[in-house]
Image 1 (tube, rainbow, N blue to C red):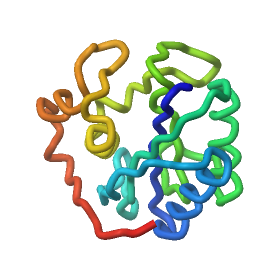
Image 2: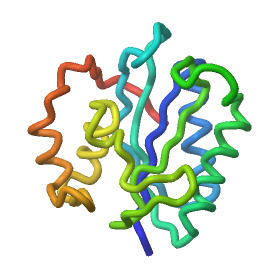
Image 3: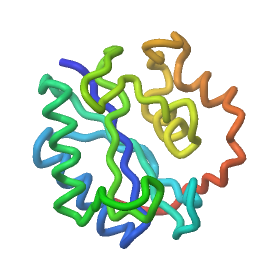
Length: 162
């Protein structure tokens, strides 16, 4: 059964929406492994700081079904898709990895490009999947994080229990 990795972010009522996202994943997929929660400044727009983390679980659901479930969770918690791409978010959930799959299915691309672009994705992913290898680059996430240029992106670990 593939190991699935999902990024979770919120900058509107952050604690409530992050908890709701994790509960929604647990309800559908059972045991969910979580990284620490990190606070970062909004990227691409002036807005409140985000809480970000990565969740992992095992599932043999097709990628499209997982993607649809993530979008439904976002919508149930007030995510609006009309308006600017970079804006405040009640909940932002992105499928990062589905096992070692490399694919493009509709709007889903795996592995997700943001893994190697943003500290708030790569750091928590390396925390819970450090030895796992990027399906395209072939390097471990721990090594990618160690060599990451953007470690100065203002990532701050926060005390947060889910």
